[in-house]
Amino acid sequence: MNATRREFIACGSAAAAASLFAAEPEKAKATAKFSAWDEVPLGKTGIRTTRLGFGTGVSAHNRSSGIIRRNGHEGAVKLIRAAYERGIRFFDTADSYGTHDVIREALAPFPRSSYTICTKYWYQRGGIPEAAHTDVETSVNRFLRELGTDYIDILQIHCVSQGDWPTALQPHMDGLERCKKAGKIRAHGCSFHGGSSLPKAPETKWLDVAHVQINPFGRKMGLHPDRALEIVRKLRASGRGIVGMKVLGEGSLAKEGRIDRSISWVLQNAAADVLDIGFLDIAEIDDIVRRIASVDKLQ
Picture 1 (cartoon, rainbow, N blue to C red):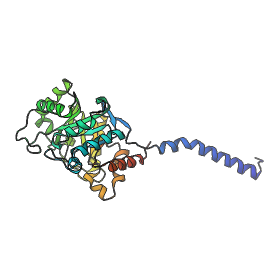
Picture 2 (picture 1 turned 135 degrees about the vertical axis):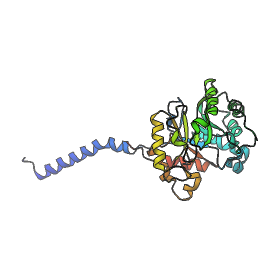
Picture 3 (picture 1 turned 90 degrees about the vertical axis):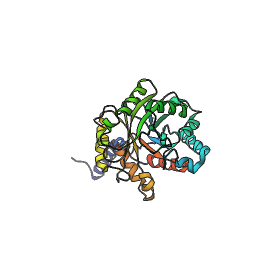
């Protein structure tokens, strides 16, 4: 009550300092960052992998991919190997990409248990050179040979777009389930395209891992971003793994200077466990790693 003005100011300064010190842990929480090398679980599959994935399906169709057209076979092998050496542990491919062999060669020096392979089965007409499709199990056996592995971590039905897929694709789903029980694959699922197929995903118990088109601008997506995010949250709540594709809108968002906004939105909204991004050179990998590291984790 009888404190001098100097004592009062000193007391106030000490209190302010104490308050600032007390706030420091909260500040530290607010500035925690994401990392491309964060280990993330894919739902209840038991698969854990890196937040950043390497997609090999750049402008890919009919077993031709931009990663090989741009770099040649040996260059593509070197690029994928360099991605592993930098820390990427999730590698995405598909029968229609024609990149099974480059993944096999690139990852041959490394322990099989240290990385995750996701590939996809093409069930429609066109898209691969064969005039007729073989059954799922025959295709999976071929994939195992092409990838040089005893098991595939994730095998998905590729480019699912119809709303009735849970019934229309049942024979393919049953085949993948048999492969899972035989230990040839660890998890199965679908890559969803367009706006009709994804809404059916949460109610389909067979689904382990979903490839989802996701970015905040609706670019190369079949659904409004808010609707897609709503479905992703339902999938996550039911223990499914989420692999985010089209995060950069097939490169269109890069041309518009919207990379950071898209990556931040996807990460901060937990819109994907893994960001599956197509790379054509090392500089692109390093750029995305840096951008992910700049995003704040919200508490």
